[in-house]
Image (cartoon, rainbow, N blue to C red; front, side, top):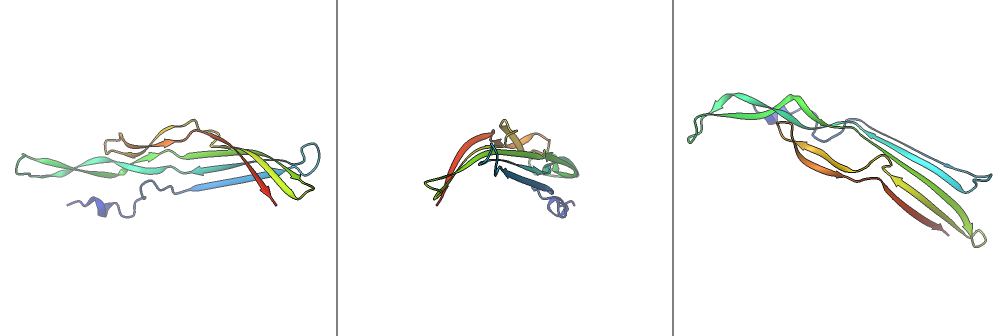
Length: 151
């Protein structure tokens, strides 16, 4: 007899990404015509993730009192279904100046989160026939402005 839960031991955990990386950079101009301005960005990448397995029929049959025979369906661990890898890019530009005889530092920053993302639906769980079972909403790029004051 085949026990699907025992067979999945040692397999990849669903929706867990094995590899991730991130980079972040920021540059502030200290002199010249761009003094006070800053630019930066970040890059994040996440590997594909197992979101389910295609099905396999158990060759042994189970006799049910009200039916003739039924085949048991269980996941085929040799046929994983993956969600795609994720790449995210954030960008920003800022301006910093001093106010009130250099007593207050003000920084205003324009940010773009997920600059390459246009939004939509992403399948995250799959049925055993390979069709999507659950989705998540991918937010489109977001623009926002922040201003901070340091005393």
